[in-house]
Length: 339
Ligand code: NAD
Ligand code: DAU
Image (cartoon, rainbow, N blue to C red):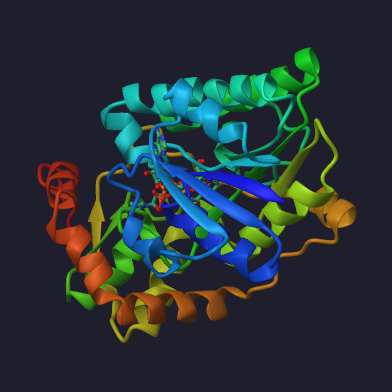
């Protein structure tokens, strides 16, 4: 299969490109990525000159470029997005532009090229926030609450509309929190791991009792690949790790694994509109595709910590560059609660 991977220089996209090339020796993979602050060509450096890989720097909103690339492939797997909730709170404009408008540009190109297969990578955050009980499934109503999740919900609706209105062969997957190699150190796990490697405290939001469901990135990649090849057009598939932890529990595990105590926790003001809990019931996906989350949390965390220990230059370059300004803005003026 010839596959266009948008956002392939980001966290999950990078992992997906490596997964495809390893798992499917017949596949040809092209990446389209704008290389925003979150995209990093260094991630794909070892693929330079690879016979089955090509990289194109460009924006998913660049109609001409997108139409040209989509016309040469059998399928598009769409990761490209502004992905960080905190940034969407500071400035939502890029989220609307890339996540909503950019997705429509890709859908238009798929139609114009004779109904190219389109898989949209989305998030569990479109379903909103859960209380203490229950879990999201494919029939959960949409209730996005951050500018990020609202923009992803908008994209999901456009993708579904392309199926219902035009018969475009689409699938959508909504996944819970990923972790693993190449994750940008603004997200909680790589931020905490790299802070500890620098002997810095870790900023825990609010009471630390918000719950996320953790899935190792390679398990997500395997799932997306299964949907791409075996998914039914028009259908939605949910991925989760069956691995709920409060942020405090997760932080304590990381502290312990890295040889630190609770004194390294820096409680900070909560994220505005912070969703309390996400949980996924992925029974349908498991039954339809035979997919299951395979990597136990401790195994995935140890691999992840080891990766950040081994790849210090990768994240140190990021943290000492433009990201530092964002970090200052994010935490510089934030009230620190007494410990
Ligand atoms: P990321 O921020 O690490 O990577 C996003 C990539 O998209 C970057 O390489 C960036 O350069 C590129 N990009 C951004 N705007 C672009 C544009 N206009 N044109 C072309 N490329 C552009 O994100 P991620 O964590 O890898 O997430 C990938 C996708 O998976 C996103 O759609 C996200 O919503 C979804 N998702 C992420 C998670 C998670 O836990 N990280 C969970 C569920 C779903
Ligand atoms: O659920 C899937 C989503 O997971 C994806 O769609 C998003 O792209 C991805 O960024 C992620 O969103 P979250 O907001 O859950 O991830 P983040 O790593 O930003 O935060 C995870 C939890 O940790 C959340 O409850 C907020 C908390 N947190 C986060 C940061 C950055 C902290 O306590 N301190 C922090 O410094």
